[in-house]
Each structure stands twice: as C-alpha cells, then as structure tokens.
Length: 268
Image 1 (cartoon, one colour):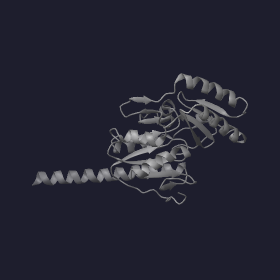
Image 2 (cartoon, helix red, strand yellow):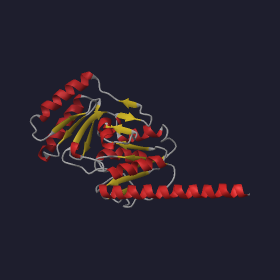
Image 3 (cartoon, helix red, strand yellow):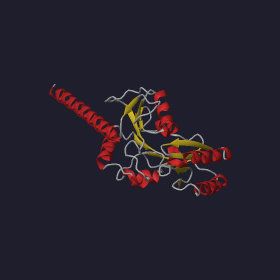
Image 4 (cartoon, rainbow, N blue to C red):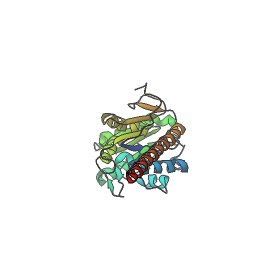
C-alpha cells in the first residue's frame, strides 16, 4: 500500500519484535562487510528484548554467522538466509539444506555465469546464493536472466529479488515463514508480532504479520504491504529509542504501583 501511515505507534502490551538488519537497523553499504549496527542501537535492542521476556529476533538474508558477528556481544534469536536457518532463544539451530546434486552444479553454473559480468558478486551461503549487482547495475537484466534460468532448471529453488541483489534459495523459505516458526515457540508464542523491514524480501513478513493482527513497518519509500512507515534507518533508531523508553517507563510505573499496594497491604 502506497499510503502506509507514516508514524508507527508507541505501544505496550504482549508483543514479539522482529527486525531486518540491512537497510533497517544499519545503513546499506557498497559492500556487505562494511555494515555495522551502532553499539547504542544494539543496547536498545537488548533492553527491548529484556522487557519483553526475550521475544526479539533478527531476521535477515545474511547467514546466522554474520548476524552473530553484527549483534555482538548480544545473543538474540536469529533467522538467517531468510529463514533457511533459524536459532531459537536456547541456541538450538535448524537449517534447510539443498541436496548436493543441486548445490554443486548450481554453484558451478552461477560462477560461470557471473564470470562474464564484471562487478557482479556471487555470495554462497551454503543453502542459498546471492547475486549482488550494486557495483554493476548495467548487468541487472543479465543477472535476472541467469537467476531465472537456474530456477527453471532446479525447481527446488525460488528467486527472491532485493535491493541490487537477486537470491536463489530453497522454495518455501521466506521471512514470513520464519516469523510464524518463532511464534510457535516460547518466548514468542502467544504474542502479537511487530516486524520492521525495508526490502522486497520483507514483504512476506509484512503479509504474515498483518494476517496475525500485528504491526508491520516499512522503512523507506515504495509500495508495500506494511501498514506503517518509517522514513530511514535513523528514523528506526529514534523509534526504537522511544519504544524502549516508553516500555521502561511503563514497567517502572507498574513496579511502583505494586510496591504501593504491598505497602498498603502490610499497613492494613
């Protein structure tokens, strides 16, 4: 929806929080290795997680190993490669894999295909592949043609376009499915989902969150299924600060009311 409301609400309640990383918590850089999440943003994520019994996860096209590095020193639940790998709050990890008779020829043909496309980078993620063309936008059509050829040859795959990237991943894997999987287990179960993302890869997540009556937030311009919008990464940081402060104030007020009640009870 083009007319998504521009100011997500400040709220308290029984919520589970899900955040994309690139373009949401951190600005997009020319090379993925240049990205970092500011320390104060990580600290606020940790505070928000603490106030919601740990019900906060990062969901990204990056691998879990990369997400761990970017989230240090905190150990959030994580979904990597759009949910093809998922680590719960207890550190248990589940992974979807491709059979070797798909994985090996797929990687071989992709490497051969990008070898003639100067500036296009192939990222191998173990069970998925990303074709990055941010440094070579003139090859966009060729990248899409190569990806479509691979999906036609290997029906186990699905093609996922993103910002200057096309990914090939196992069919049925997307961020919406990852959110639903988290919501089936503690501490996420029984909570209303909040998902913040910026890219085409996040639209599946917005659709699932909307169906579940949650809060879907698109970062940046463009048509979206999200119901709310934040203008930029810095707006996400400010919103996150307000949400964490608001919930912290509410918890302090609740604690004070409880202490006053217990004090009154003792005096009676």
